[in-house]
Image (cartoon, rainbow, N blue to C red; front, side, top):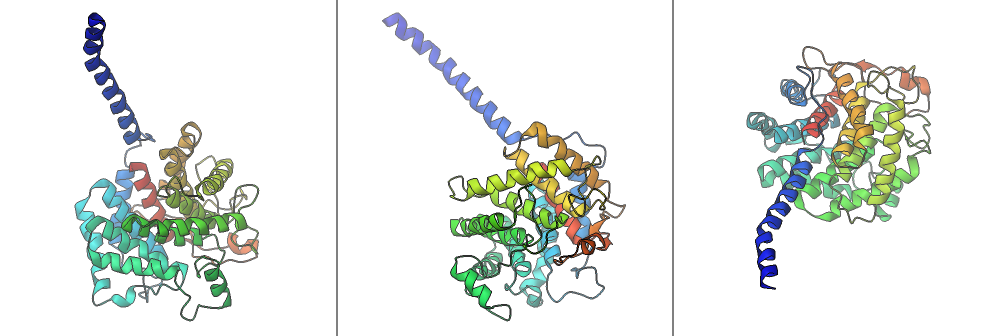
Length: 384
């Protein structure tokens, strides 16, 4: 018995060492993530992200490509600003972060009028920017702006946009800003997910999850893709991109025990499987996803690539299947960047229309924030 006890005691340090090594390997494997590289010279997410973020900072507040200044910060700028901030955080670029913070300073002082009124999804998504600034700086002023906007999205309807339908949605526990356009599923989830990340209050992300399920049940088709709206039977690229990015943003922070998570994962996986079938040989997706003759469009390509990167990194998607597709999407996308870090072939801002030709004839912009923003999301996701 004494000999056995001595043998056991002698083995304890070895067992502890082996256990520690195993845990260290698991921690290392989890933290290292998936390697989508190596990247050709100049095309790494660090290099591309830095160029696109610098290009954003060199631009005035945007107004959908018009020469006149905006009355308020538009949603494409919000999405670009948010992307630049997350890129600065993931790369630890203090100078970039400081410049992005300074860009916001007038909005807290002499240009408070540039903060949108939180009465529409396209306006309320702005909350994502001050909430990200609060996460990075802990400055209460940013939290006050962002949280107030996120709260108003689920508060009682107000202003000129409030109508009987708004009140119906509100009484059902949905946001009164519901309109059943797939674009909404980024605009709403980005604001609410950021409010959850900033405050830790599950209310925000759980109500966004409930909203997402309603949209999934209403708009996702048997092939896994989404009509732009119930009365618009076309699989518009960027509209589907908003949905793909919105589900990704939601899922990466939605608690595992959330009652709606399984349904959202199901919708997400169905969409990703469908997108895999429609990616072209150059890594691109098209203005109308299921129409190979439609032109390759960069904003939707970036959003789908972001969703796949995020899915692979988080283990929701099979690495062997979707990893190469995400890499091909990134390399195809950055091939559309010019020497100024402006991306070409970006569909202009688009309302819904029950007219296929309307989507095919949309203007193709260069340097449009609709396209610049998701490139920054992709760069962040690749490095996250």
